[in-house]
Structure formats: structure tokens, C-alpha cells
Length: 507
Image (cartoon, rainbow, N blue to C red; front, side, top):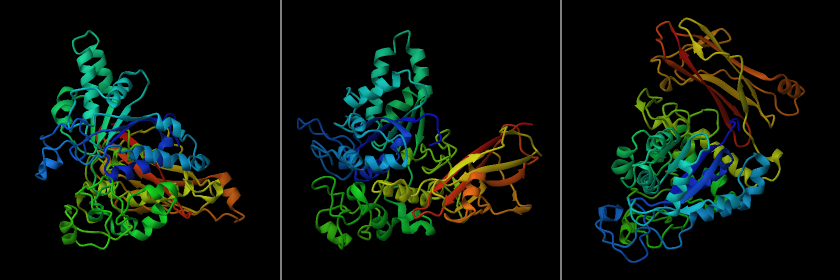
């Protein structure tokens, strides 16, 4: 970790199989967060009902399928997938602590599981334990942003805000409270899954930052957008070796054809079947909305993983601004390898690195000795004393890279053109040779393997990755240039670390 303080997060889920997979990955990164709450919340796809048999005839997935009115939808009594995930985490917690500092104690996570507004989709009419927690966190005086991350609807968030509005709207404190909340709260959501943002949060709290984190690469449509070189990360072979056959988390993780089902008699959840056709699924009473059946043991979905991926402490600093971009995508389009502007590419371009990272962390869960697992290269940018630059100025980008395991390293600087506001490509120069390959300026370097006589000296003396460029003379005041230092080791489960440099033009 490189941040001085952990980011404060509240994670909200409904009981969808991809939410289970998403929280498994989240827990592997939980040492980077101050997890304030793990909250069950409803959506139009999952709602618990009030337990009194009250029939709901409003809009949700069931009504779109011509079903209802009904008392609940795809939510079994006693559903506890977040508790299950934390119990698996408790089993591997001692091993995780060997490989990284700061993992929260399982009891701490257990104490932070709450039920939010789960009865009916979009219902913000009354408080819940989850909304009470969010209200308390919103109003506290702890410094920094509070990230509300929802892979479900926003009713629990909406109720917390509604409760604050009801309590303070007509008081002398309202202006200060509103301004405090607007500066403090960031909502990162996979869509508006119950209409609460459109109907309440957006109109009443327009100054709260809302980041739309919906991506295809982390969801059921991943096979349609994955890069050809990364397709194997969705395969049964890779998934078995690196996820589903690896310890307690792997046993819990859901894959195609595993025979599991999140809810009894769920006609939309046919992913546990293997060796059947779409027509056979229909005959069994299922609605094969996905469109087919994939290879048993292969990836299904982690649809909501994108909601926290840009908060990871991997050096990309994607949490700073929604335009920066990172493993969770970007609020804009990136230019794909075919030269097309693509929102999918802004997230899929990172998928391979993220999957390798996942695989390495899964190995941490079953590896009790530090030396027997892979760990991230350590990257530091040096010598850049000022991030304000002038047109025509020559800038030297220099980074020091070390590997804690003594692995070989490859690395390069590249311009993240789409994230910057200067509308053009920069010619990066290394070793006196101009490089013109768009966004892929490779400057490899090698650290000798462990045991080589040079290894101790090289690690002690530090390895420098240097490139330079001239600030374009047509750059105007206030425009930004983004450069990424990317370094990858050659460990058994290769890991990539980054550093982002953002330069601002001043004339």
C-alpha cells in the first residue's frame, strides 16, 4: 500500500450470484479499505418482501416477465451470502496477514453486516439498520470521502439521505449539512437498479458526486468485450487453476455448471446446469436470458466488481476523478486497438492485469509463507519536482522499481491520452530513440534472476526507468497530460504495479 489513509467504503449488495463473486474479490483487497458497512439492499432484481405476505404489483423484474403480484422476488428467507463470504475470509485471514498488512479482523467485518431497505424495490419510506448506519457515517466528522458502493439499488442510500432531509431541512443547520454531504459523499453504482437515484437522490441532492460504474467486462457479457489475448482468463481451465480450486474462497466462488443456485426455484438462474441446451432449459421452466450455456467451470460474472476497482491502491489513482480511468473503467471512451472509441475498452484494457492480480491474491489465501507467493513490484516516481509544465519544456519521467521477491521485471512509460485533456499524442523518447506507437511506448528493462551475483547490487542501487518528452507548443493553459509507469514481474502469478503522473500546462 502507498496511501497514507485507507478509503472509507460502504458496500451494498443484493443476493445475485455475481454479487457473491464480487464480494469475494473485494475481501481480498479489504486491507486497502476502511470497510464501514456490508449492507443487504434490494433492487428490481431482488427484494425480500415485508414477511407479512404483502403482494407487490409495482415495477420490478417479475412484472417485466409477466409475473405477479407476488410477496417477494428472488430472495430466500435466511439468505446470508455476505456472512458466508466473511466466514471463508476468516479461514484464510491468517495467511492473508502474512502477505500484506492491514487486513481487518473477521470479527470486525462480521459486526458490520447490516440489513438495509430490502422489502420492496425503490422503497425509501422507512428507516432500516442499514440506512441508519449510512446516515450516521454521512454525518460523522471523520475526514475524507465516504464511498457508497452499490451493486444493488439505491434505496438504502436514498433512505439515509431522506432521513437527514426530514430531520434538518427546516433547521438553521441545513445549509452547512447539505454542503458537508455534497463534499463528502461519492456514490459509485452499477446503474440505477431501483429508480431511486432518478426519482429522489439526483433531484434533491444534485451536488453529491454520482459515478456510474456499469461495465460489460466484469459482468455476464464479458465474453463479448474481452480482448483476444485475455480470453483465456474466462476459460474453465484458467478459472479452475486460479480460482475455484483454490481454498475456501474458491469453493464459494460460482462458475458455470457448478450445480449451485443462489435461490430455490429461481427461473432466471440456470448457470449451475451443464450439458443442456437452451431448449432443454426452457422445457425445465427456466428463462435462458443469457442466450446460451458456457463451458462448465468457466467464468459467469462479477458484474458489480467495477464499483470498487477504481478505488484500489494500485498506483493508478483512479479514485481521484471519474475521468482518470482504472481497472473499473472510465467515464469516457478509450481508443481500442482497432482505432475505435469504446467505453468497453476503457475497462477491458485492464482485465488481464486485474485477473492476474486476483490469481496471486487467491494464492495468498493458501500460502502461509511469504517467500512462497508472489508480491507486487514497488514503484516510485522520482525527480519530478513540479507537475506544472510549460509548452516547449523538456520533461524527464523517471521511476525507481524494485521487486520484493527478486523477480525479473519489465516496464514502460506510456501516455494515457484519453484521460488527459490535451487532445493529442506525445512522442516519448527513450535512449535517444523516438517512439510513436500510440499509448504503448515500451521501454523494457531486466532484473537478473535470484541467485545471480548482480541481484543484490541492482536491488540495492535501484533500477531506474527513464523517458522524456517535450510539452507540445500548442498546449493551452490548464490542459492536462497523463503518463503511466507500468511495471510487471515474472512471478508464477505475474503482478503489475503502476504510477500515474498528471502534468498541468501553464502558459
